[in-house]
Length: 87
View 1 (cartoon, rainbow, N blue to C red):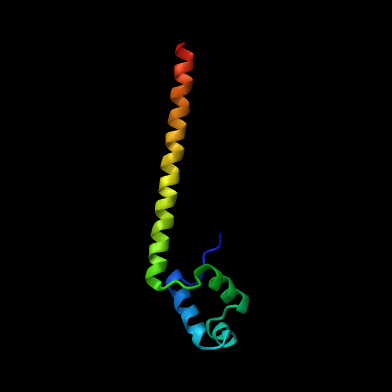
View 2 (tube, rainbow, N blue to C red):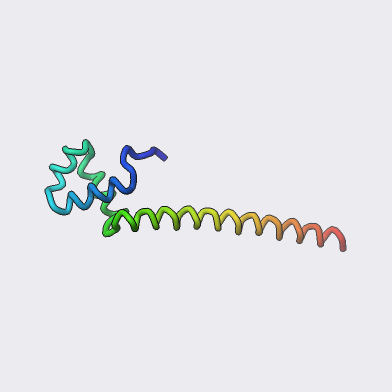
């Protein structure tokens, strides 16, 4: 996935600015397409910069927890196979 030129905090600030002025002007000012601003609005819609940080933290924790669950599933499968071989 391509990394954006703008951080998530910057995107939220641009969206707040786009709420006050026309999207066309904001798109020209920051050198992005109007469609890009629409995509950002779909993703970050009503979020504040603090909310974006919390969202990022939650996404990281979610990924970490998924990894833990996957590792535990593998361990359980190994224990089941070992138990089957012993009988």
